Image (cartoon, rainbow, N blue to C red; front, side):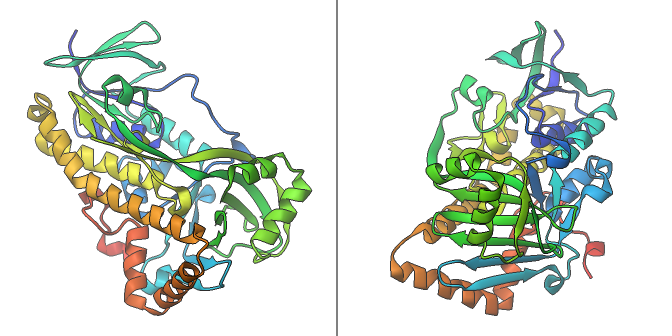
Length: 405
C-alpha cells in the first residue's frame, strides 16, 4: 500500500484547516471525519458560536474557508467591556484605538461547519473518509491505520485533531496533564431588550465569568455562563422565564430585560495539556494537545494557530521532513508550546483571581482592572494578544499593512 503523506483525524475546524493547508502545499492528504459526530442544534437556535480573532480569520481565508461563510452571518465586534461584579471596576477595549476594524468575529457553528465542508469539496484531490479510527500502528516508515468502514490506510504522518478526549493521543501513549475546573459552562442564545451595538461584554461573578457575545440579530446574544455544577444544572432545568430572570439579574440588566432564551446546555470545564505534542509519526493539534478555560474565548483560535504553524513547518521541510517527522514535530512544538503555556497560565490565573474570596484579592483585582483601563500602552498590548497579533506567529496569520488604518 502506497503511503499517504498526511492523514488528519478529526473533521472539526482545526482538522479541516490542517488538511486544506497541507493539501494546498502539495502533500497528499486524507481526512477522517466521524459519521456520528455528536452535534448541537443548528440553524436559528445554533447554540455553539465561536469568537474568531483576526489572526484566525487570516488563517481561514488562506485556505478558502472564510470566503465560504455567509457574510450576513458573520458578526464583527469592535468593543469589549469587562467588569468585576463584586467591586465594579471596568476594563474597556476599542479596536479603533489600535487601528483595527474589529477585535473579533462571531461565527455560528452551523455556518462554520458548512464552510468547512465546502472547502473540502473544493479540493477533489483531498481524500475524505466518513469513518472513525479503530487502530493505529506506527511503523518505521509509516503508520498503519484501520478504519471503522473496513478500509486500511498507510500514512507518513498523522495529525490528531480529534478533541480533548483524543483517541489518537491514547493510542500512541501520550500522557496528558488534566485538571477539572470547579465549574460547568452553560450556553444559550438569548434575546435582550437592548441591542449589542457590536460590543462583547463579560462580567466576573463570584462563581465564574458570564459573557454576552453579539450575534447577527442586533438583539440576539450567545451566552456562556461559567458557574458551579449545581447552579449549572439548575439553570438548564429552569423554565425559560426563570432562566431569563436569573440571567438578567446576574448581568445587572446591562442590556435591559432578557426577553427570551433557547433551551440551555451545560458541560464540565477541564484544563488539559499533553506532556508532549508528538510520538512516533503522530502529532497533536487543537484540543487534543491543549484545552483552556473558555473565559478568553481562545480555544479554537489556539488550535487554528497550531494548524498554521504545522503547515508552515511541514512546507518548509518538504517531503524530506516526512522521512523522519520527529524533527518537524519538535520544531512545531517549540513554536507552540510556550504560547500555549502562557495562555493556560493567564486563563487559570484570571479564573482563580476572580473566584477568590479573600478581601485583599478582591481589592487587588479591582485595582488591577482600573489601572489597566487607564494605561493605554498596556491595553494595546493586551488587545494584540487577544486578537492573535502577537507572539511567534506563522506568516499567514500576521496582519497585513492593509488591515491597519
